[in-house]
Amino acid sequence: MNKDDINSIKALFSSPKAIIIIPHKNPDGDAIGSTLGLYHYLNKLNHKVTIIAPNDYPDFLKWMPGESSILKYDHQKNESDILMANAEIIFTLDFNALGRIGDMQNIVSTAEGIKIMIDHHQQPDDYATYMYSDVTMSSTCEMVYNFIEMLDDTDHIDSDIATCLYTGIMTDTGSFRFRSTTSGTHKIIGNLIEKGARNSEIHNNIYDTNSYSRLQLLGSALSNLKVIPEYRTAYITLSQEELNNFNFKKGDTEGFVNYGLSLKGIIFAAIFIENHQENIIKISLRSKGDFSVNELSRSHFQGGGHTNAAGGKSDLNLNDTIDKFISILPQYKQDLKA
Ligand code: 5GP
Ligand code: MN
Image 1 (cartoon, rainbow, N blue to C red):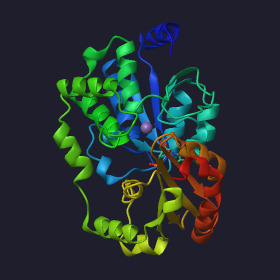
Image 2: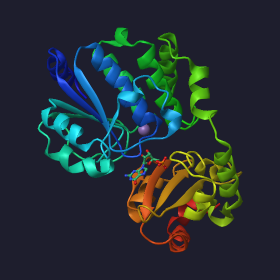
Image 3: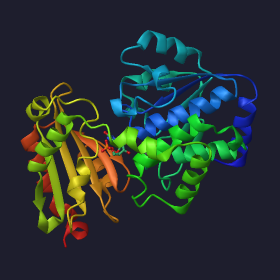
Image 4: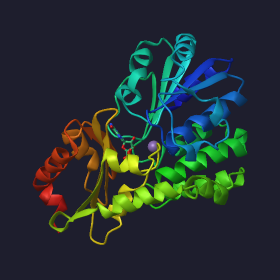
């Protein structure tokens, strides 16, 4: 985003506008944190702002300031369609292609409002009027902070905005440990704490609200963990039956894939989760170092993301998906072999 873009956006913001903010489908902490952080900021500038999420998100995000005002497109379609038709500005946050917003794709691509993308995923599509895309950023929340800073408005950051942005930076960096965490990230985190983000409480709200059944589900996932030492790879499977046995709720499997990656010597981890309702296997991929799970997911599993964290899906059944996964590993032997 250059100086001209910022000046144009400043001019746009100089009178109250009808604004919509959209995160990706199955929003995570960064998607909800960044949309809410931007929402509170734009409200302070006296705009009329609505967040429309394609669908619901996990309970562990449902304490965030302003969260209850978020519309869910799959349940509030009519209301959302009217707002979309009247929107003068549409922010799209934490995704790089309109395919990532599911059933909202058509309405957003045909909407007249000026589109502003803020996102850190690789290979972004070219649908926005103004694009702030930076794959070196830890999180979209870090970028919303920078966006507010570029508009010379960090004075507007209050404890609500700080709390939302802190949350997304924390969740997208695995609590500040992934390679994407820079000194710049930590400086912003320091500023957010100064502005009123209560770091210890936020950590508690996100990570220490496990249900008993979720821990049992984790036990089941870990007992399914398989290791392929020659490719420094580990993977986990969860069948729909196992999910049902442990009363699965949205968000319960968040972070499970990281256990595979925590094994000594493992640089590539995957989790395959059966979803009968959508008739797919949902896949999460993680890596260490230069091995790109974004590339692997794009090439084989209809997905994408970042170098070290990506997602995708498979239309095969669980067993066939695993067979496919194992059969493609030799293509990556250069990177994966010890
Ligand atoms: P997760 O595995 O936590 O669901 O996602 C990891 C990263 O990959 C996130 O940045 C997410 O936005 C991206 N991602 C997850 N699923 C998909 C997908 O189906 N398609 C694409 N393009 N990206 C995905
Ligand atoms: Mn993100």
